[in-house]
Image 1: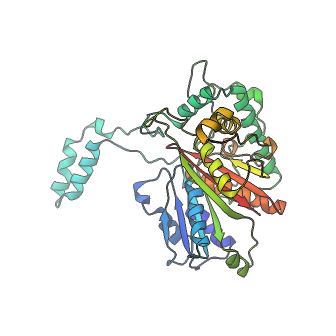
Image 2: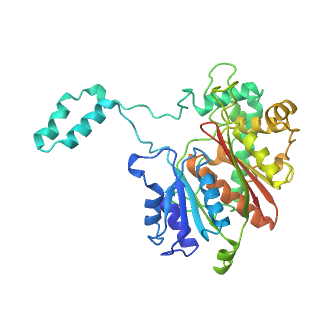
Length: 395
């Protein structure tokens, strides 16, 4: 994250500047990173008087951070701010049992060398066994993929539909890279300057050959090919008032005009349980009603591809008479034009470093609107814990 911040600071000539506020976070982080946003701010070249704080809302972390910064700007409390997120699937902190924790803490309390060494005499090999890292929901014990398999079955989403969406994501992402769209959005790090998850040469046949990942039985449909890969990455965005931006000579790409969050009862604590990743199906209609817009009023739809099935379930819900009448108490939202959805590819192809995805999508959509010169874009992000975060960008 510090590296991403540094590049943003350099790009916008903010070295030694006191920015109004920084909000950023990570979903899976080491205990040493308890003050992540502040430490990254101090390491990025910003003025040390720049305040910062951590945010964590699973996959919606950095979009939530951006919304919070935007609200402070809109309220006139600050002129500008930075929002971001970071996660690393290759550096997940391991946890150990209480025995090893007790041993370490007891040793640290010792005043003499003997007192520090004595607790280690009771240590057994079994105490050194780490807990396997996982992303299961604490209340169900199921992973997001397992929950999404349930959703795919409920909404009757076929394997073929998922593979077709995944193929489109890879093809569009590959074309965007080839056209240079990401050139000024991505900064090389440790020799890597391009997403290496994008498969320009994949095909429906290759995707169909993959074994299922979360339900190995004949009813399983989710695979590594139609699910987002867990990756390393960081992303951040600069938000500001129009006056501040123009005074610095910065061109405005888009305005963040509306946002909404939602959560669903995916455990069934208060009635029938809902699909764990279905919260955007509720958040978007609320946001549209407040904005006075229809689902079809957008030029671009950036829908986070946690799983191809999740996107398809959400789209199907918005078209469903039964769902919209029963769950939303309204008429169906209708269908969207698929060619307008994720024009530069999304998480299935590009990857999903949990907390970074929101800022990555926000920057991608803002640039597309800037290139168009006008228009509206909708962002929809599902998140662990049965949550969802959505936003509207306009130019």
